[in-house]
Length: 113
Image 1 (cartoon, rainbow, N blue to C red):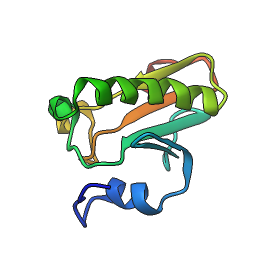
Image 2 (cartoon, rainbow, N blue to C red):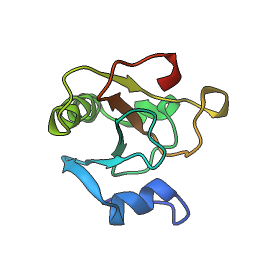
Image 3 (cartoon, one colour):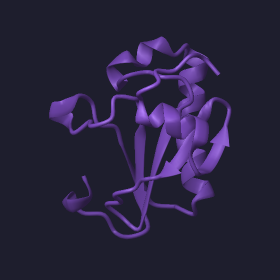
């Protein structure tokens, strides 16, 4: 695994978290403040601050990341779901390690944004 910042919460969870799914350089964990009955976070194992930096992934890795998001939704039993990426503080990002929210398990409304 590439070097990761010592103070990044999500880097710590990549190393030592309770993963609901792990494969191919990515992990999925349950969100500790869920906005839906199923609320999972998908994280790359290597530290990338935000979606703005997605160009740090080569094309194959970016493709695998999206495939992992879809695979994780299947693994946690979702057929209908929402995928969200918060970018920057104004976009609601509070942890600066790129992550995707997968929300489902109910009919979603704006409350789940």
